[in-house]
Length: 382
Image (cartoon, rainbow, N blue to C red; front, side):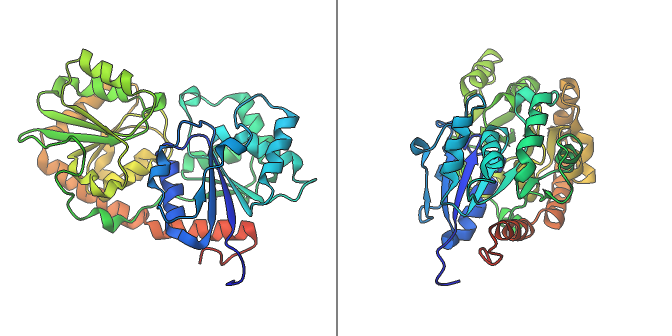
């Protein structure tokens, strides 16, 4: 293999601000280092925050301006442009609905052009499908994925959707849980690891990691915790278009202990500063931020979305709440705020669960085998 050039991989993302799928993609890129060259394109050109987490020595470029748009109505000419753009790469990796036009272009033109294998990843849905999948999109996915090498999903719920609604054969669907380096979350973080945060004596720190997008419903979190604004500090780590809306609601509710430091890389360096992890989303599948919080030994209060209930320890499951029930969510927070010993015992159970089930090494091995097989180079990431 020494005389073979590293494979060229084209990543087509629905958006590339740091969230679960972006964190996983960047982590794999960084771990594999010089074993591949990566080209990253986002359907939202301004959503490129995750690029900050890519190791500076990595062979990577961002050919946004030279690639066709991932947005637009289905059009043969644009699909032809995308098919041509895929030539010269060794593997195409597409992510979520925002990249599905590229998947369709590959499906249409791969019989006529020499195109690399394509692996599609579905990690969840935006707010426009949080309350139900769109029939036209389901049909489009079914058509577009017909020549994909694989469809990767991180949750049992998405696995069922892929097979039963998108009608993908079992052999094409790969269930790979998100994993992290659990042991690296054990050391206590530095007190100043979060910009602008100083832990105040007697206050409980509640934190979350999330893109500031509608589907994350962070306004819900502000509303639910506002009655406790005198005894909690709320930290929302992330960036996105809803920052001003969240800040405005906090001002309206006089929630002056809200801290929004923006994007922060390396969650292992600061998640342990939280006392309770919060997740308020309308839609998730297998949130990697929850796994990170579990590895740091935190209890979690979350909406009951995706695989969240089955992800956490049995001890934590009473604190997984129907997403519409803000009264119950407020009560769940109150119970943990008032019971430090319970927070500690649930956090320990969550850490044990993460160590047993969500190790990064298992995830990396599965992705290395999948991508290597798709390229016909099984040892590419060995």
